[in-house]
Length: 313
Image (cartoon, rainbow, N blue to C red; front, side, top):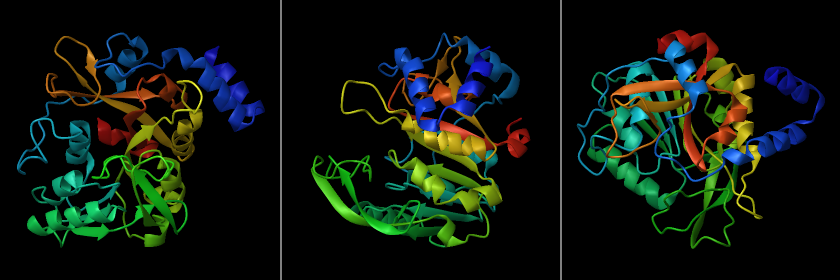
């Protein structure tokens, strides 16, 4: 019955009204981020049938502060180690200081290419020194730009002098630090291959995807993406526009998954925490509407082309 109602809404309502209904429907779920999921039965039933579970510990060959037993997002490291070919092309969109660029570039037997995009000039200089110090310049192509749906310049802003969580979507009048940055499209690079996209752009996900539609449709890469809910100016609710990039991916033939770690007590843990186990990896399928029920403004999702689902088994 629920699926029939959703199909009717999608067919007869404009997208903006459909999103508003979704937003109202899931409003009750919005709260502070939990440290674990232990009561979402509809997820548990799905992942038991469709998702891989394996023993995993992230590689820790690089010095601190880049890596320890937990790294930044060990679920991304697992997916990289499992799905990125040794000669693959990895795109690090929103590279920041280069943790994942360094991880892929120093992988044993890796002979492919890493494309790293970091628009903040100060951060980019640090990234460049890291790549040089690790002697992986032959494997890494650095771009001091951001990715968008068109080539232009825009202001990137942040409240921190270190430009952590810098964003093109913030009001530059509010944060304390900002600078003008250049943006290009992924499609403008005309790459010969694309195996894996990591997208962490603080609410700019839709523009990145729109600017790379041809590349994504042509090569159907695996996509690991942070999806960000933007707070509304009134109240504590969130804007359902966060669903747009997920809808785009679904329309291009992608299945969506929430990465998690199954604990020995049977609960599922999302994110990073020193007191949690990173052994049994889980991918939980979900529909784009259900993104609104995941507590937390920012959460990582994994998108897999339908024709590559067999790679997950």
